[in-house]
Length: 328
Image 1 (tube, rainbow, N blue to C red):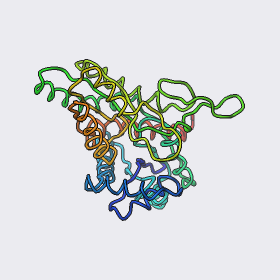
Image 2: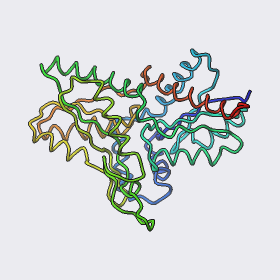
Image 3: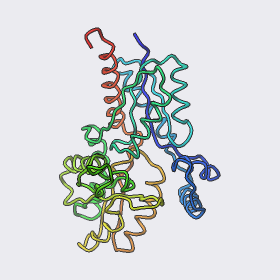
Image 4: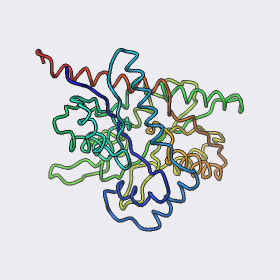
């Protein structure tokens, strides 16, 4: 029986401000960044203290391993990062050195896009060698993922309803991506129009992001109304997909909303895009519009999330066994 394991993939984050320039070079594949962009990222990290993404992801890996063990599945869970340590290539090499022959690989970015999941997949494949992998392409519509987000949202909604005496609407968000990366090619292979949700085209990201929001909203029927926007547009040249959170907040204020819940459904744990972008920048922007903005607790060590990922891993490992069975 081949030795099996699970590999979880995440973005990665530097431990100190001094590491940010190197980290950003990894994020943009070595392209030069203006000094003011680097200084702005340093400033954001200084305001939140540090990003806990790596330690939370490692904890998520331990929780998934425990979930699998409870089901009698003996498989170590490894964690690799695309832009910081432990780097994906180093972790894949370690897996091979440990004798792992088959691996269920899951990217902790549920909504599939060429600019996210595609890059993670290529990083694993480049080092896989003889390691047989099953890569989960996307899991935006996983019921347990929606359950995990709904559990957090329901708690925040109930607290605000006790405080305000009324149900509170919700703004769901996911990380934006450059428009060029989700453009649909025309018949001559040139990029045609941008694929803005619900839109058209070949990249599923925008549709999957909204799909996750819809599943969460269905599970929390007490919310009176909800919107969707893309957050954290980057500083690279060219447009990024929208609508932006800022323009959406402005429109929501125009409807007379005074209290709002913002829930990022593209992120599985706290990091700078949550702790700074949401908790500082968007809260300040909303306050200027007369809106009190609150955020549910991030999934982080959610047992429901751990069960969701463990289920994906279990199915991936089963597919690998099926490929190696005599009848496969």
